[in-house]
Image (cartoon, rainbow over all chains, first blue to last red; front, side, top):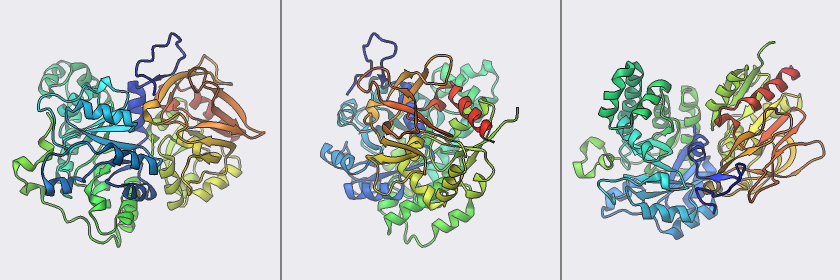
Length: 306
Length: 201
């Protein structure tokens, strides 16, 4: 595996791990669905259904909720077994701040690391310095300031956090609307007010200024957390998500293969109600779900990360 | 000179980047998801993305036959990365059910350079494109292992472990690159393709 900083004297030598190739990888996932899988069989079902990538993890968020305890990076054997059976990109989760789990995942050759609030945080002050890695990172965010702090630390992709493992899409909606609203607000500010905006967002001025000018994050923005139906996925796309992570929503439902394929189709045709109606038929029961509003403070995963 | 209308297959992938690059290169760009939309364009780009997903959605939304037919009628098509795979007559390391269009006579190896940690950027010289090498981004990219008689090799990797690998080809009105000019802000390749479309109208 080549080093991040290839110490080659030639200007023509290939360079790996650049911001361009890390962010570019996420660009290739746009309009697609990334599915949580816990076994090689599930990974195969996801790929068959048209997933653009799979997220390999030991327990889906709804089981993490049900079973409790400390939740960590998956066993490398399990990740290897998934990389062996699918040809699409494989992502895996590291705990917030757990840079050694991330080093291990990079050495396994995973295609993206999710520094994820779904696992138990390993550091309550610091996130991983993601610039130090060749592998790209995706991080969750509940608002624009959080997204910008993660990008400043080197995240090459952002996803709304939602409330994972609930099947309740309301938090994902709130986070996606919030991020988009804050971006629109920045666009409306005169230049001299961007300094205070940057202070309030706790984000670097240069990044805030860039977003005020372009009207978008400098990295791809996906949605995650509580997406359980084709309509959920399509709504998040209409709200401005560039793609969808589905966690417990597929393999905790009655008919995973059919539901997975339906969510893929709904993501592409997110603005076409007739197609959405067609793909929503006969899917059987969605995951049972938990009303996110009933969760106690300590059960709210979205509040992990800062 | 009239601006050609060029579609970007918008099932999945970096559609917006291609659309923006086409507009900057003087073409009218529009996303294509339905057979009826295909009828309105003079040329087509198959974007970067996940080739297995794009292949599956192409079948599900009944675009394969109309696109094959337009290609047979001479419509220019350009594919980048996943788009190159979709234009290859033979794919190695793909899924068994993965199918491309009746496109370029070549054998392409999927994810040939390795996984994402091996993705890289490097300059590539292209025949027919003036003004020095293109800065090329290779993201889990394919390469071309073999080309048929009528296929012109436009560019290869110049240095490193994969030096000499074919990464840009053309066969008549069909163009394919293993890398992503749409992500770099260099519009020369899109201008080259727009000229190709203009000439074919």
